[in-house]
Amino acid sequence: MAIRKIVQIGHPILRQRAREVTRDEVRSPAFQVLVDDLIETMKDANGAGLAAPQIHESVRLVAIHVDKNPRYPHKPPIPLTILVNPVVTPLADELFDNYEGCLSVPNLRGVVQRYAHVRVTGWDRHGADFEREAHGFTAGTFQHELDHLDGAVFLDRVKDPRTLTTWAEFDAHHREAFLARAFELVAKYGG
Ligand code: NI
Image 1 (spheres, protein in one colour):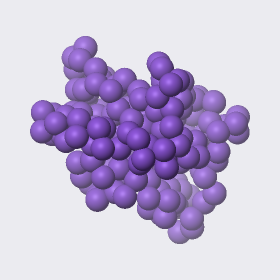
Image 2 (spheres, protein in one colour; image 1 turned 180 degrees about the vertical axis):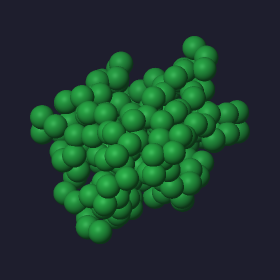
Image 3 (tube, helix red, strand yellow; image 1 turned 180 degrees about the horizontal axis):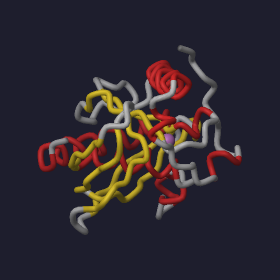
């Protein structure tokens, strides 16, 4: 296992559509090493999730894990989840506002609208079928990571650029109000 370098915004790989993975490929030792590297890199950077293109691998693979995350204290826990060839489907039109950040977009957060209720399907790291529903911030985390596989970053979805803030200014001016609203959303939607 190895901690990989995280690609930063401006690198063309973040703007490409990542390719599908075959079942044979999922079962290969090289792919399993890639999965382990993705997990280790995500944990090292305190990420809530990381997509393979962010570590220079343009394949449809993401890792998600939320457990008392210091970058996102409002997020309900999500067990370590590996998704291959994932698809996200909204279950309702309802949207909510989420303050997002990204390990490939240094020191910036902004408000993005996400579907409040989604179904996520795909494979796990061994190629077995995966399906779950997600709500609220957990749904937002899945949508953020899956965007990376289509060459999108959260900045593309920021409707009002005036919501953009560095992390220090977020802590100073937006954190309190956001967290108060965030805990209401968690109470409403759960994970
Ligand atoms: Ni990201």
